Length: 346
Image (tube, rainbow, N blue to C red):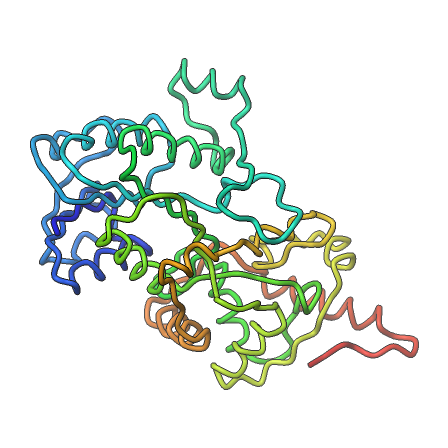
C-alpha cells in the first residue's frame, strides 16, 4: 500500500512508520521536518505545515492516510478536504479524552462525548484562535473526528487511545514509575491498591492500527490495555519484578495526598483520587478492539523496554513527583503513623 502519515517521527507516529516500513508498504511522511528528521531514510519525506501549507500534498494519491497529530478541527478539515479525492482511507488518532461523564467503568464507543461550549466554538470560528494549552483537548479531538468522517464517509477509522506508554515516550507519565521503582528504596504509592488502571504499549497499538488500515477498517474504536484487569498494586509489583528492584511501596491514601497538595495524574502519574469520580477514565471497554484482533505483549516487556529507552536517551519527562517532595511526604506519613499504627510498606 501507499501510505501517507501526517507526523510520523514522534512516539506513536514513529512506531506506525516503522511498522508500515517493516511490512513493506510505500511510506510518505508529511511534517515540518523538525522532530527526528534523520530517521526513516527509506521513507519519502514531504515538508510543510498542515496549518495552511499543504502544497506538497497536492496532486498526489495514496491508498491510506494516517493522521497522528490533528488537534484543531479547522486544521484537520484542510488536510481531510484536500485528500478526500486522493486517498481511499483516512485513520485519525483521537483520544479517550473525548468522553464525558467518566464516573462509571465500562465506557464504550457509544458513550457521551464532551461538547465545546457554544461561546468558545463561536469565538474560535470567528477568530481562528487556538485555546490556551490543552484546554478543551477532548472537545476539539471529537470535532476533528467529525471533520474526518464528513470527508471520508464509510472509510474513516477513528482510534481513541487511553494512556500510551513505552519507548520514546516524552510525557514521563509511565516512565516516572519505571524509573522511580528502578531506583529502589521507599517509594510513595498512591491511593487504593485495587484501583484499575489502563495503558497500552505504543508498539502494540501501532501494529494493530496498521493491521486495521491494511483491512480498510472503519468506525470508532477505543484502544487501551491490557486485556485483563490491571490494578495499581499489580502494576507496581510488576515494575519491581521486571527491574529486579528492591523498592518498598509505602501506600498513602487520597486524603493525605490531597491535603499535602499533591496533584493527580501529572504530578503523581496514574493516580486519580476517588473524590474526582473518574473511575471510567481508566476503565474503558475495549471489547470492540479485541474483537478486531488487538493484542498485548507482557507488561514486563513494556517496563523493561521503557527503562532501557529512558536510560539510553537520558530523557526526563514533564510528569512525575519531585524527589524532594516525595521524601518530605514519606517523612510526614511516618509521623502520622506514630501512636501504635505501622506504616503500610510492601
